[in-house]
Image (cartoon, rainbow, N blue to C red; front, side, top):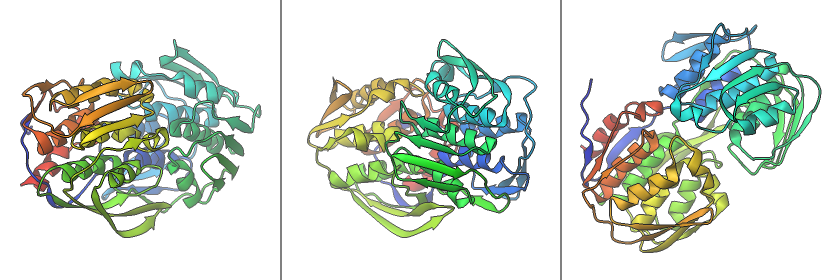
Length: 425
């Protein structure tokens, strides 16, 4: 076991690094590959616990998944009802998207999770899937959730009451595994990884950020799905290199899907120096290399649309705002209350650690930035992997910063601290 220091000092980030495979795409690749009896190789799968939860859940549902070189060979075909409960651990993506699979494949299953996941809402996805004829019973809107996944032809058109990439993916996977066409209305340019992956796998699908038409829900099996580097993982290093004096860092092979890169757009309006290089496409996803240098920032206003495209990176944007003279206003933060922890409260704890004041607004937060100074306080991360990594970057830019725990980064980025050490050596 590697003993990690929980204290982070100011230091630049330099050289070249890569980041793990994209977590969001990894979930979807495993599920999509399970739709075919032909083996599909999934390479560069995210190594975190969340994706492991999806992998093990699919095995429980009858998919054959085996290590094959540097990837996983996945064969689906005839899926089956699990013998016991499906444990999604801490992964909301696992529950929500696999509920869709169970609806489409007509499977019965009971989903459970850890204490954190069991406190998060499941009724929004359940309600949308019921419109397809599913019988789903939640526990006061949360886990455990029992699904009797018998679907019917009740509806071939769904309106998203709550625009969400996970909800629309659950609906699309229900259509894929049932073989029934589906139209979805009411999207608001949420992440389109599922749409891109279905198209790359040969399904007949069109989408424009508002409507989705899966008119031919048949995919070809076989081949390889190569997962690009996770932008949400790269985001920590992007912000760290922007804020830490003397930094000049290249992050290679990163997913640059425009539904994910709201952080880049906001940082660039604040004066960040970020270059996109070697841009190309893989399995329907745009990827490239990012070169980031330290740059002084200025305050800005982040609207709800931009915040939605950077929902996982909002704590990092708040940290960036702490170093930008003036008042930065971030709108559309209500969903942060229901993540792995209350991330809105976590933002306050992060900023307090460097003496920066933040004010809660109706569905927003205002950060008065300019001169962060470490206060010596220990940051309570409430076992949230993203807050632990964000705190490390805060320390690189404005430390020393002490963190209560580093134990939860395995959820998405198990070797985060090793890669950080290489970038700051």
